[in-house]
Length: 57
Image 1 (cartoon, rainbow, N blue to C red):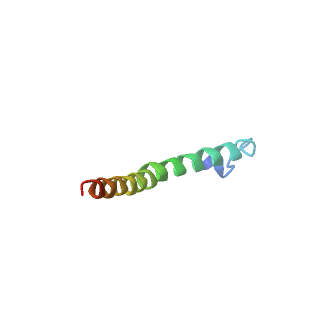
Image 2: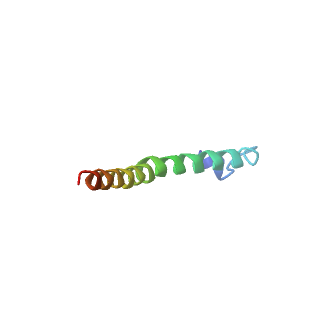
Image 3: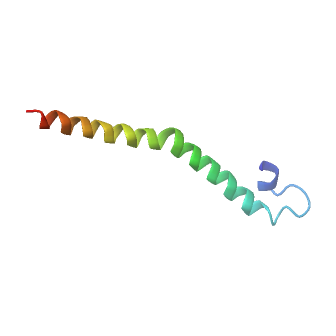
């Protein structure tokens, strides 16, 4: 995808936007999967534990 994104070669100037979109999507989905989703899950789990702790009084 890198050569396509850089438009190296004949006719690749039409494929470059598609390659850039695919690369961006792959990077974004990797970030979301490895960083964002676990952080959100941890925050929600901590809130749930706090609510359980308050309800046991």
